[in-house]
Length: 311
Image (tube, rainbow, N blue to C red):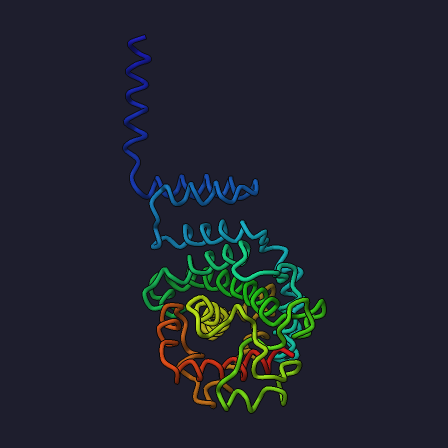
């Protein structure tokens, strides 16, 4: 009995003596086991209970995956099916393709699935004070930042598809304004530059007051959602512009996407909207939308990019 007690004490103090890196490694191992069994919440709990470590790239990747898991996201399925089916003929065909991906269907604003993917995205983006692929490379090194960048692209593309599907009110084939909702535009447009586009090059969006009520520019929730849509696009562009995927045959489609999506950046910059299209931080965007002039610039951005790009 005495020997057993001594052994118990030794084992107890050995467990307590784990250093932080050992605790993190154990948490990651346990989280991977939970994820392989589809136990998303359990994986999140294990990782967060270990003490959040945004300085460990593997930890960040797995935590982001655990949040995406809650939305039913499967990376292998996305790469083999959705990514392969994106039409990269033009920037417009890309946006339309995104609206009909496996997980794109949304019937409400801020759905649980959408928020779960967004949380996974933010897990990656918020590892650095300055949000961007260059900052992640500085912090994590080229290889690990590259892994995080690819994961960030994929999750942003998934939520961009959800965003475009719901707020664009698309039908089963991705035609804007053809869905079961009542809107044919993303926003209500007060900006003269935006109004000059609606009905001319914006497809079903032919009126200036037919926007989604969930993107109401006069409310904090509406402005937050408006910024979320922009951030999914701008962070995708930022990562693609600063990540070399030429050696990956599996992800070569992302290179094609990069070439086309940059036409949005070029058009926005030429239109004097460079501040918006180069913005990668949600809080910066929401702060930006505090003045009437900047709200009008955002309306012009939406008309120029989302309305013209998705028809």
